[in-house]
Image 1 (spheres, rainbow, N blue to C red):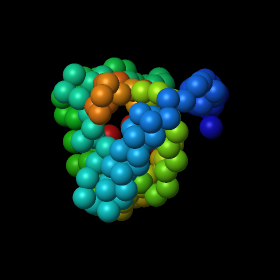
Image 2: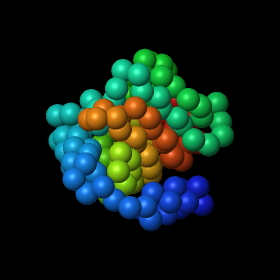
Image 3: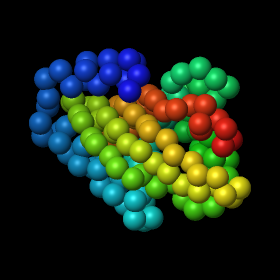
Image 4: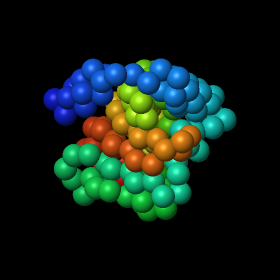
Length: 147
């Protein structure tokens, strides 16, 4: 795990918890991940129309995306390379107030027959029941090779 990810997790996990809302948001995210594993939903269903998704790191795909750009320039092109949907294989969830962290692995087979596997950390900031900001940490070179 990179130092950036450790730092983010440490800062957020050491804060005081707001149990009622944090547990509700964490459960909501966990439910969406479970639906994603079963092929019947996605955490993207929680994204606010005005959300910003920041791909952390260095490389041509690192940067900040609004919802439409994120879906059109990252999600749809990536998914088009997959022979089967990307599926999370394991996930852990943490929360602090309006912030939920998902630490997960996901994998899929590409149309080329190659295998894609990656480890992700999404730091999701909520307003109400919608995600308004995401900081996404992943093995960006592995993702970019697929794109």
